[in-house]
Length: 345
Length: 169
Image (cartoon, rainbow over all chains, first blue to last red; front, side, top):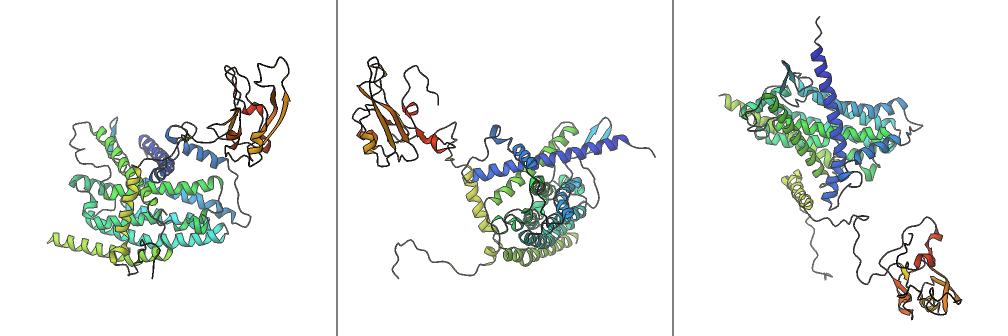
């Protein structure tokens, strides 16, 4: 069989690029989070390490690397190490199916700016996101600490409950688009010029709330409630294993922001971009930039919410998930179905 | 019931309606408030680069003054030590020898003059008690030290430097 070296090289470069970009964005999200928190609380935020405090993430990372690594004596050593590794791996895996841009033409080859255009992209994302809870569960459980255990129980039940509503919000979206491939969804939005958020506003709000819960972000950060569980599942962790847990949260935030931009906000599409009279390669690059700007807006939104709303109580969280979001998601599906039926006749 | 102020508000205990249970309108209101704070003036003073201005009556670290010819004003009369409510000032007097007229203004001077900055309450009574205008409270405050001994300021710390002479901090 003929081996297509160009294809392999292209994919390796693309995977490396996507990974590096996710890591850098996550790194600077920690800086951004502190800056946003500071500014919203009428402070300045980090400004000592480098200009505007831009070297702060490096300083934090360096600190975490040099910290002493402690593995509790009563813990399950294998699972204790597996926990943060799994959290990190899973966080990085989702980025594979997100179309970061349209196609580039390099030396006669057409290069797609998507690592894998699988036709079940959304299903893949669901599968990987549900795996994410295992990192937290294993980490919390293997620490052999009651606070960590409580936290992992919370995280597990929270993520499972919110996945349902999230899935149903997405089913309504699938009914509209008729495709599970993320690339198709973006191209449809590009061709019609109507972003899915205008077609599915209710579905978007449900998806947004659920992605807050899925990424363990405030106001749903019960799993790491500092004041009642001392940090929860990463209570016993130190050094870079703690860093992995914290980092995974930021990567998750980046990926779900990118996902929301892709599914509901047209991905790399912006009105007027296709009618520019420039070469298709430049259009593609501009489209990728547009996607990143959308993603960064969502990341800012995540932070903005975190520094506004206090944490939900556990029973409120469960009631919101099961009694409100799931019925509303079902209603949204019903309306969407009725609307499609009405249009067909 | 008589209330202390008329600012008391009765607590609304009605059960929440559907919109309130959705939390979204209230969350939106809160987010508008935090967004407004982005554009507000920050009260932070970036300390080493920028220093907070003291009021004109600020009382900080003491300095021992000299006259126009660079001679020490202090005559070790001890009035400041008597006036000090915290008993932070100690001194030892000595007689001026012939040939030292360019160093000390009067025939008696302080051979040792110490202020314990941990005891001092910066009330400024020493400044008021001094008949020779020898002690003043400046606009700096005591820096941190690792040991208690570092807070006992001797003459070399308190005397203002001669013109043209750099005081090593």
